[in-house]
Image (cartoon, rainbow, N blue to C red; front, top):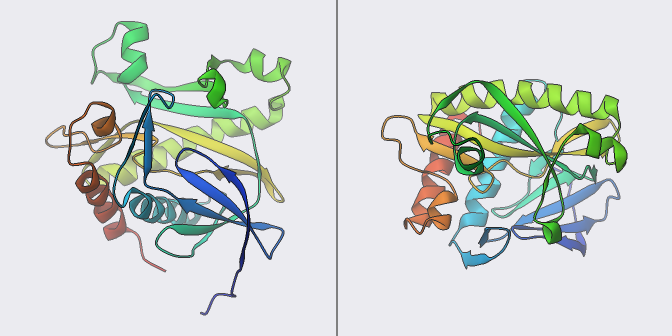
Length: 244
């Protein structure tokens, strides 16, 4: 079925990895994926060739998979290699991090070995503010600074755990272990929607058999083969989700 034409308007916001544009439909935006790479709260910067192409493909397919399982997302359709059409939402300034296995900052904070499987998923909350380095917060901060109300956070945390179950299984089926990852949510016309992206930029993904790192930690740790890593994840994800 032919999709209606959509025209790109003014640039609304440019972040570290994506650019948002208005469209001729006030309820829709175009999300453009860049090749820029950053780490350590923007202190390390670089470029990963075709990262934007891969992340758009990966995110589009994962959003499509989640939509098929009843998760409401901002995804509307993939527009081009680097662009997707999304529902306009008001981003809730609370980043939700789900941890299934000890890695990164959790290993340092808890003195636990990297790779230790957790007895249950951990939900962590961070205040979405690049200038402040996205500090960790809790539900008291969320209430005190009116970032979201209790009903919204109850929904977000419940939905995050459901999404985690779906993603752990999805990645396991393509030989990847979902270590931890970030989710963002927004207020849309039909309630709270999963927004932003799901890609190796915001997920720790390890090859289940070899333990090879297949995410942005390769950039953080100067492990090389950056483009190849993103392309490999994209290939595996695309192989399991029907293209539209």
